[in-house]
Length: 253
Image (cartoon, rainbow, N blue to C red; front, side):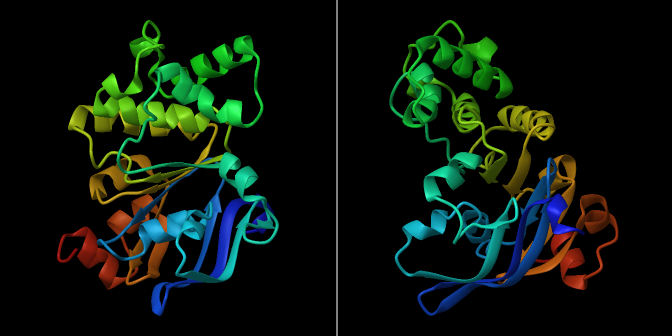
């Protein structure tokens, strides 16, 4: 595929924690406005890979990276200011992590950091972001209340709203539903389906059914390598690699 059509792609990406190699020669093309799922057993490099895309691994002193990560055809590690990169490539974590402040202030936090001062503009951003995260109707009458009073599922949708408030182009999700009950999980899955009309979404998930339900393409990671990457339907119905088939059918992992 012509790289001009790609939102993110990596070439020969290696990552080391000290002497331990966690990612080995990862080359992957991620298309715009699609949901790409990363699956594989614990410790296989999925989350580590996800964090290379907005340089979250920079926070770990022992990390060393070789190879290239491109976002909009520019090298993430050489041609981006890290603040600008993380504005455009947002991240939702495994456990909901709202700030201990009001619902309103959680969503307004990012825009304020990026210089938005006007109350009317902030009001508009907060409402739109909460609507886009399918949370507005549940919280519109209690925006001044502390976000810590929300349920786990609501907190996670608030964290998604907080990411959307700075108008990213890519949303990274690291097992966003693993701490949630089935009903909240379904709401987030429905939300992801809506969000891909506007955003490129990359999601790490342990839940095979979830990957099958929500993603357009799936990458299967094993021991720091990508074993197979293809359309989700093909990965789940006719995988090319025996190891993929064994993992999907529950023979290991």
